[in-house]
Length: 182
Image 1 (cartoon, rainbow, N blue to C red):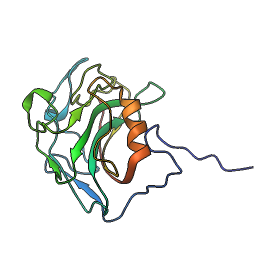
Image 2 (image 1 turned 120 degrees about the vertical axis):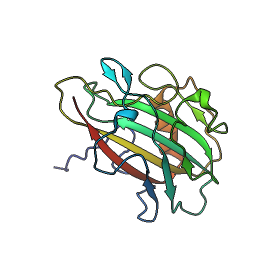
Image 3 (image 1 turned 60 degrees about the vertical axis):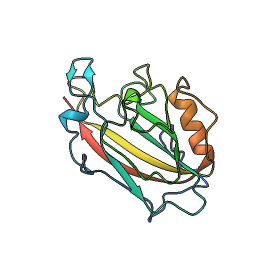
Image 4 (image 1 turned 45 degrees about the vertical axis):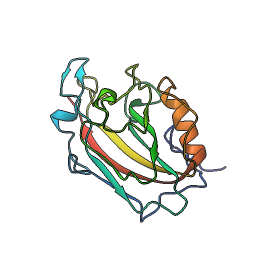
């Protein structure tokens, strides 16, 4: 009997593109393995955060990278498929960071990229806000190095479709994970 392999909906167990040890994601706002700061929590659904996307920066993208995509996903959300908090794609290959607050599409901080619809129903960053009493959730920020300059999608494309296209075009990925519960 074959062993059962598990994966998240956006990171299949078997993939031609694997995590590259040289490709790294970091943040001056978040500490890997730490707790999500109040500024990055959602404002609404019973949460009183500031809903500000964190600063993110990456290095070590593989040769052939033509663009990047960034997502924030909660695999512990009680939905059966997790919760998409942020989906950004068509980030030019020469861009290696997103400033704090870039997740507000009105900010103009990443004009060359597209922020598509999250599970909150609109484009842009939606901070952490797990159900009360549900324990700590993991919030996974991932940057993907892509082999294409652009994904032919727009701001109304559902996160799962963007994730499908990301996986079909990724060269490498890097992750930073934080937790939060209430």
